[in-house]
Image (cartoon, each protein chain N blue to C red):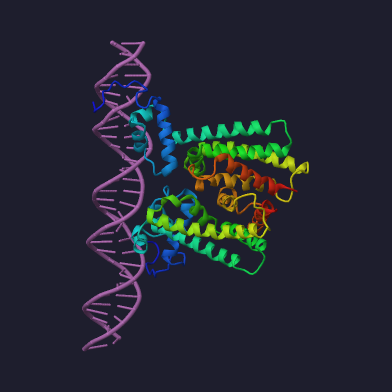
Length: 203
Length: 203
DNA sequence: CCCGACATACCGACCGGTTAGTCTGCTCGG
DNA sequence: CCGAGCAGACTAACCGGTCGGTATGTCGGG
């Protein structure tokens, strides 16, 4: 045995269960150094366990990544559904959704960094699955824009697809410049970006 | 000798010189599969040479990446300087610059994909250098927005920094959805995105 | 016109190090 | 005493980079 007594219960180190610790460590390291530059050894050391533990709970390194993706996708999908299905004028619904995706992205910046930067590292099957869910999300958002354009609340000068990609582009890009210790709080950034979108859509 | 006569001059295979072939192969593969997932062996095989040739012309795998970055940075910097320094009203200059960065990005989609996706793979020194040039580019662009805001041509509702990041976000994001065989030509996309920016900046 | 000396361009076997994933066995709560 | 939970040594593959060697070209002197 090492320096510590090996009285290890499943939740000795840090108090949290091993699978969660592994997922948290992987998320942090993937966000910091990227998927490929993070070895399985790094992850298990950061989590305070060994490879035996990791491969006891996860099938592969890919699975860890896929798990992170699943969390992000589920979260964003749920929130968007909530805002899109609300009982309010289109412009209120779209603005709320556009601002919310910014806030949740900033509040889970590690996860979303991974999501946008490492998508092509998954195997083809899982990649297809993620793309499909992502596409559904995109279309749900686009439907809001199209509804506003049909009813004349938004300008129809730009195809709805492009509008959505324009906004998501800025969201995607947040991880490249936003610093949590900076001057702007997530909600402020969200308000500004949502404003820009709504102003661009004015008829 | 192999199947072909070994009368090889420096430019036998494909007609183009070896360094260019290596750079082209590397660019394509980096864009397709990412830097880490592309081995030096893959590159030299795609270029029809061996590792000896690669390390004869380039110091390391990093150098290939850095070369691609240099091309993109120089190109974008030059074009922006041209548009920003022109003799025209601010809104014309900004619109031209905003549209041009989209066109050049789409016309060099492989290079820009690499640029935005693999920046963190360079060594710290070169990374600093690239970041510095990138920052200069950002500030040049921001100056245009600020000029318009000072003179009242643009709305001052949003900080200029955020406006620039908003637009660059969409540019950054182009590689994720644009397909050259799709319905929209680069110039059309550029016009739409520039329109969105200008509309968002209307007072 | 030819020859030796040197330079350039490239080949391909090879090396030390790293990686994802496996396997055996210990430990301990029940 | 038994199996879930985990440790840690192990392996086969692969990676970036090196190096000695070779084919071709160039050039100056005789």
